[in-house]
Image (cartoon, rainbow, N blue to C red; front, side, top):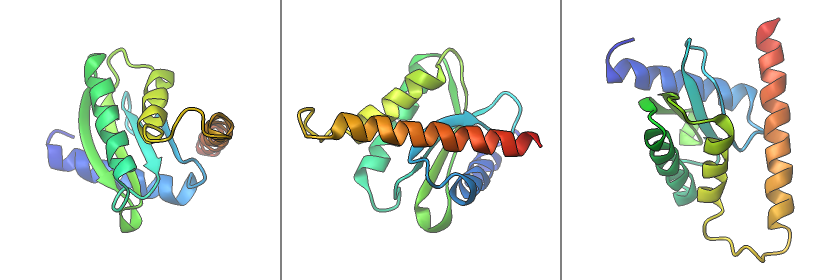
Length: 139
């Protein structure tokens, strides 16, 4: 793929795949189906939720800060799921995932009861779903 439009189309296809196969994972970072390319994603209402848009901006900044290159962006059915395809540079999955959560939780006071548990629970669910999807792909 060479043009931005091709990468945006690939990101849209990736978002559709994530929507249909990893919906329980609210946000995360996975290997794309394209060699050497990663995908940051959110299943969190991109079309209508300002927090989801803030996540995408945080992902773009995190990727660029660590020498990565954003290649394409797309959304899945009804604009609910978003995917950002990128060459990672030095950004790690853990660092980018943390940036996504930080952006999403930005307006939630840190002393809100249950917020840490919620993040840990949702992160655990996302890890399980991502691992399951990887195993199914390997078969």
